[in-house]
Each structure stands twice: as C-alpha cells, then as structure tokens.
Figure 1 (tube, rainbow, N blue to C red):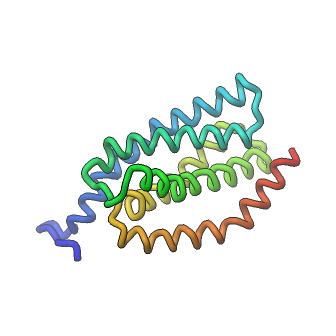
Figure 2: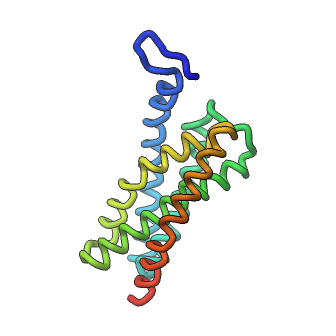
Amino acid sequence: VPRRTAAGASTQERGMNSRFLPFVAVGAAGFAVQMSALWLLTGVCGWTAVPATLAAVEAAVLHNFVWHERWTWRHHRADSSVGHRLWRFHLGNAATSLAGNLAVTTMLVGWMEAPVILANACAVGLTSLVNFALAERWVFTPRVRATVAAGIVSAGLLASAPLCTSILASMWRW
C-alpha cells in the first residue's frame, strides 16, 4: 500500500509525476527522430507512407527505450534484465505506437487526404499517454504488477487485431 505524504499524494504518485516530464522530453526527442526518419524515407528515398511509418516508429521506439533506461526510469528499475525490459517495451509501447500510428496515419492520409507528417504527428499525440502508462506499470516495474499489465496488453492487442488487419489490407491496395 503506497504511503501518503502530508500533501495527500502517495509516494508512488509523486514518483510517477516526477517521471512524466522526462518521459515527455524523451518522447519529444523521439518524435524528432520519427519525423526526421519519416521525412527522409518519404521525401528523399521515395518510400510510401506505410513502410516509412513502420521504419520511423521503430527508430523512435529504440531511441526512446535507451533514453528511458538511462534517464526517465534510471532509479525505478524492474527486477528483470535489459533484454527483458526491451522485449516488454517493444511488446507494449512499440505495438501501441505501431498500431496507433498506422491506424491514425492511414485514416488521416487515406480518408481525409491529410499530409503524412501532420497525420503522423496526430498519431504520436494520441498514443503517448498509453505508452507512459505501459512503461510505468509494465516495462519498468516489478514482475507482480507486470504480470497483471501483461494480461491487459494482450487483451488490448487481441481486440485491436481485426481493425489493424483491415487497415493494413486497405493500405497495401494504394
């Protein structure tokens, strides 16, 4: 049970709040990595939106993991190896980012004819809060809470699979 401070906030809530600003800073840098990669792949290399989005998101995910390990959660390490945390980060945050970015970017570009960079920026904003919660409660946390979170992530991924599959199928027809 988390202890309460004189101000009424639990020690767990204060720790989570103190990690949110570094999370946003790392996310902003990761966003710059993602947008730069997306611009390079679509504008310079001539890739289409779908594979460029996938590659750009992966570059940002790897960037963010390294900085979250080194800064955001440096004092809040889970009882697992770096490889295990990277696997959980990919399973949770990358899956959320990839599914969210693909779905939102595809809808905005394909259905509303929005520019790919603007569409992708909207997608990043929508997925960032989910990513913080996953990192806080599953990736960089002891295994007891992580097991519960794993069930939630699995259920969410299974529920979103039909939507993502139909979006991917429609994208490849462009």
